[in-house]
Length: 477
Image (tube, rainbow, N blue to C red; front, side, top):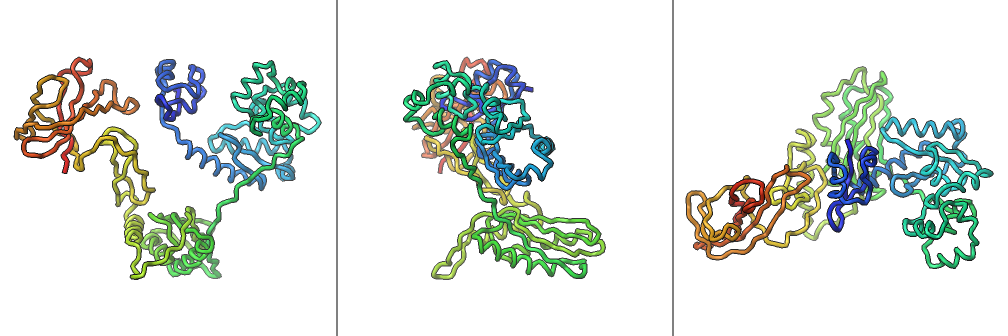
């Protein structure tokens, strides 16, 4: 099935990434979603998550440090690794590539790999080579020369300019006098300067790898000389040790895991989450109340660990002059205890989501989850009270496309004295079924001074149904 991810663009959703099936059908990144559907009617579309992709790629780069100590994210979808002095630990360069490819395949990821003397050459061979490339220093010029100029990590505009000048491969660029290229690209940034990129590929300019620091790990452990059946008495000490580690680094725990190692080798684990970052040992210990009784101790536990699997920066806060604590903190602790005892779906909170349909802007989410960001404020006022579902009303109007002059709602007649509108809200084509009608909203005031929010579903002659219907959707304060 052709599938694509889209992002919001200035003129509507734009294709961000595609599957091979979609590419074969003619869908390319940068194409508008409307045009992509015209090219491939069976195309399935979903919203892309660039921030989630960046976070997942960073996690993958840190996970790849099992093969070498220096790894970093290298552009969208790439990881750079400095394997100097590490290949012999895997049995050589070829064996390391096989190991990396096999591990990534086990995670459900496809990859293109290359090992070269320079970072630029490895980047080029991984993307424009056969998919499994090993290049030695004596063969560097011969292996990279036939590659296109896009292999130099240049921008699209610079690569297009070089092709217009007749420079299509790395060998063609090397044959051009350096003085001419230096004059032509004197004001170009280092990332778009062909000479700089060529020297980095050939090793004439250094290109250090800036590796991010690993996130701090917080783990408290208790090694027992004699197996014990009930580890509950150990929780306060473990929680205190863990919170001391968190306080030393300025972090607070969001998710904690208690791992219990039995003397026969079996391992059991219990997890708990918090609505806010915390480093209160008593509160963390109480999150595991009632959860350890369901574990099978076997012949006893001889090792117990308590670790923070999720941590966030938490600055120390000074209480006020009246010594009152933050009310939000007490509410967060209540949410933590109830969710730990009855499950994360036991407590829900209202939140907002991205949608211009009024009834879809609000949703109930677990209280333990992150607070969703506030959506943009509509340009027109909205009522404080919405009816779910909207209630149909009988309307009398002068013209079919005009505002209501009188309407009957809940067996009461309301005469309209003032109105504002219409405000047209179109259906969400990526979620609604074909044939869904648009809405024209009116803010009206009746003869008693009460204000309502009415909308007309559809217009006359839209071809999506019969006579337009009117609904009461909200009431203003």
